[in-house]
Length: 327
Ligand code: NAI
Image (cartoon, rainbow, N blue to C red; front, side):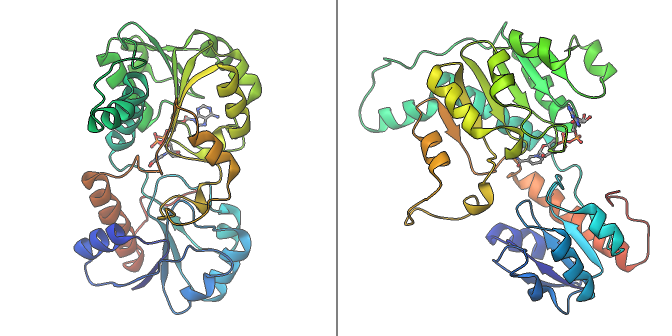
């Protein structure tokens, strides 16, 4: 099958070419959106990523161009109008599980970096500054960690935090009995938030979770709390987070995802004037750590993403059931 890949980087080309078994792969740097959808003419499938826009008009155009399959090379699918896809009988597959360890471990890396100020220590020592002034951290042992969303990634994250000797409180629409058996306590958000020293988001972005962290929920948290978001930018009202950072209500913020990330992330903008005032303000805080959606970015995860996506395309071509179809 001819497959049009959008928003591709060198690593997409490397991993998909390595595991390709007979398909014609065409890699476009451009994101998929209303302006670029015509590039998919003549392709049987499109392969899209987190910031590609699969809105109703884009999907209608793909169907009109006789594209037969949308293959997401990611887990989240909040960027796809599933109703439009079903109306046009365009199946959408994704990669529901690719190394949950990659994202969970990145969340932990953010916690350790913010807490022990490794980013500052690295720069200081390189400049011959061996002072410890203002590098004080805190023991994770004995602290209370709140986990919002206890699915595949949340569970791995919880196991790591339990290993540090943390107490874990959780919020999810369904409680996981295995986690409860390990001592995890499920609570409603209103009683979870005030008791946590660290809060980490691991739920998907949907109507219920959009801006689940905003002025009101930030106000319920312990003063000086650490908030980590490796899930989706839209879970956090960034302007409210900035206000909370300014007042000291939020003591640390680690984000691997950002509401407006599609204009920034995955691109080298080091020679460009960045017009997004919100991210620039965020990056000016000494207690904020931003990474550019790299939670998934391990050898193991990239291998699984390529293998699972290509397997779904093989199955589609062979008329087999699609194990990872959404909906
Ligand atoms: P999952 O589907 O295994 O788990 C999600 C959990 O969230 C489930 O337990 C579900 O019940 C819960 N949930 C759903 N709605 C909720 C609500 N309204 N309130 C509270 N909990 C709710 O998903 P997985 O694999 O653990 O991934 C979680 C998220 O991580 C993805 O949706 C994606 O947005 C993000 N992600 C980020 C990556 C990165 O590179 N930074 C890479 C992969 C995923």
